[in-house]
Length: 242
Image 1 (cartoon, rainbow, N blue to C red):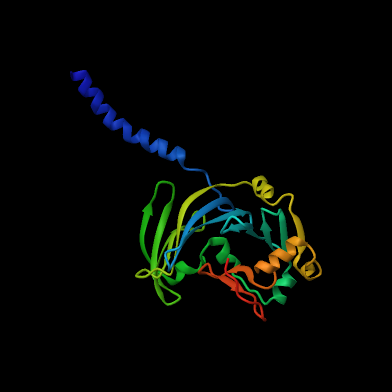
Image 2: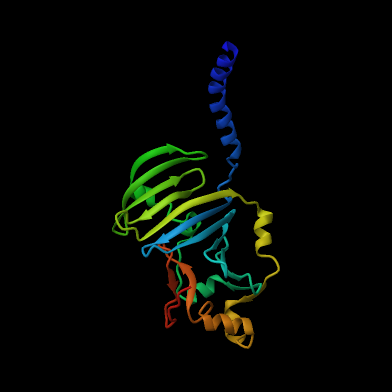
């Protein structure tokens, strides 16, 4: 009986350490510039969707639905990919200027502006399973908001715009390493067209379809503001929700 009691006492001392070691083993080794982060996004109407951010150095991909995803290159180009058709449309820097489309690259890269914490008040720092997080609260766009920031990877664990009645909320649901080779595979074997050539290619069934649906020229620009809303190109382009 004594031996059994001793064994139980020892197991109560050892098991927590074993559990902690197992937990540490499950935590991936992440580099801030080579990762894949998945978010659950909720808007003010209670609608939810998944958003995926994939970083490869200073290049990154954002996917908000299954029909298309966007790549932002460090050279200032923006490419919109359509996986079902294996087609893509490249916007050069000149195209973006001509469309009067502006974007905050830092904000897209970090999901929320990395400057947000400097305008908010620190709350509680926590040691989560795999990360140290720092909480912040304060007004964002005039709304009382909450941010939980993971400094090690430059991403929010959670961001709630408008605490009492959320206008938008991002919650990190998964993050994992993602290497350069895997990133390149995502955009291989696509037939690309420059945006500048779209007007001369309306006989192309893909181009005609995309224009008709408002993806390329006459509708949504493919750019999003800090609230995840589509930014429409100025100068006569209609609005299109997708």
